[in-house]
Amino acid sequence: MTYKVASPTELLAVTGWGIRDIKLVKKAYVWPFQKCSQVDLSPVNYTFEVQAMSAEKLPFILPAVFTIGPQVEDQEKVLLYAKLLSSHDKQSNHVNELVQGVIEGETRVLAASMTMEEIFKGTKEFKKEVFEKVQLELNQFGLLIYNANVKQLVDVPGHEYFSYLGQKTQMEAANQAKVDVAEARMKGQVGEKLRDGQTRQNAAKIDAETKIIKMQREGEGEKETVRVKTDVQIFQYEKEAEVAEANAELATKKAGWTRLAQLAEVEASKAVDLRTAELQSEVERKNALTRTEKLKAEFLSKASVEYDIKVQEANWELYKNQRAADAVAYEKQKSAEAQKAIADAAFYASQQAAEADLYAKKKEAEGIMAMAEAQGAYLDTLLKQLGGNYEALRDYIMLTNGAYLEIAKINSQAVQGLNPKISIWTGANGNGDHGGNGAMKEVAGVYSMLPPLLKTVNEQTGMLPPPWLGKLTEAGSSASK
Image (tube, rainbow, N blue to C red; front, side, top):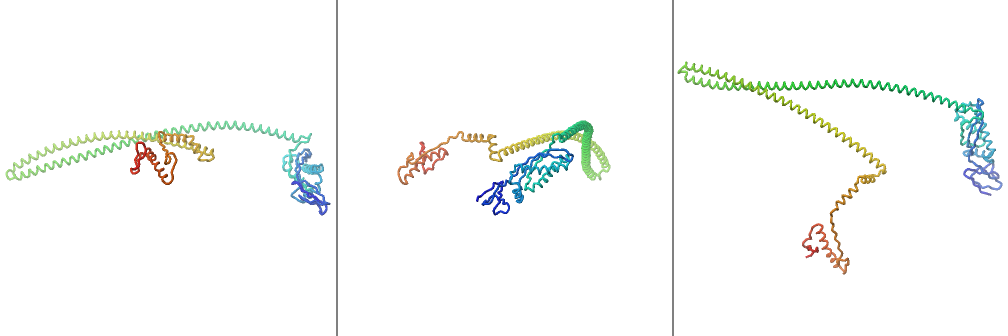
């Protein structure tokens, strides 16, 4: 009895005592009166050059490579292969001739039913047909086609069909290429001329439209200038008319007021005179009526003369006031025109200054935005190069900007000129030796530390110890009370 184990690509075929047909296992005990053989399941490549003939009686060679092996997924097919072919080496002439005969037979039968054009153009379908028909024949031997590669069809010596066909295709392609080149050249030349003509037409059209628009703009500008000048002139005339009307109204009112005042004054004076005359006539009426009438006539004549004088004086005052009002009005008119011119000049100057300031602000803002964008891109690139490490980016920026050097310089300037004083003192006896025992040793140590401590505080802060603790001597020691 022996124990046998098959390799990963093999099976053990056990026959004999106790086994009805064939037992296929990976490992088994082989008892007496039993026989064990190894069945290789690995596929094998078979390369053939099949000579076939098409339906037009044109011979050709079909190079092909088939990968064939047992159908390991089907237990019955494996058993069939073990019975029929396992006793032969897969590279033996028997198996090779068997597979080659099946492939050549099916290929020739299929090629005989197709024209050369169908075989050449439908290589994929031809390969599929050969694969299916060969597989049907190999199933009876338990074999499976794992892969089949059909190479390029080859001419049989003396029959250069594919060579002539290739030359034909090549010449057709060359002729078509020449036609395509000539057509492309023609399209290029025609397109160039067409584009040139369209460019010139569009340029002439744009020039004409530009001239028309320019003339329209110039006409509109001239119209606007005339309109503005007309409006300004009308405004000036209206203002001058309003001023003249106001001056005339003022002069009329002043004349009326003067006339009324003078009339009131004359009337008041005459009323006094009349009242006096009435009283006088009342007193003397009884003595002399004739004298009274005479005196009355004399007073009336005098009143008429005085009235004429007053009227002339009033007319003179009115004329003088009118002339003065006209002079004032003319002066005010010229002053208003000068102020308006000054205001227009100041407004234009302020407008130009504002526009210049606005333009400068815009350019400054654009510069700041461009600088910010550039700095943002620079920082983003640095951050990507540093793997998103913000601390490393900060250190790099501080190094490139000289921040650490500036910090060191500021620190050095901060301590420059300082003269620190350092005091060192030891224990009770001045050399670190605390001789003696008990609490007095500690008290003595603290007492000996006070003088240098107080001296150091005084030197560095200027503070003196309290009187109850002691005072500092010139030698620097502290005398306790």
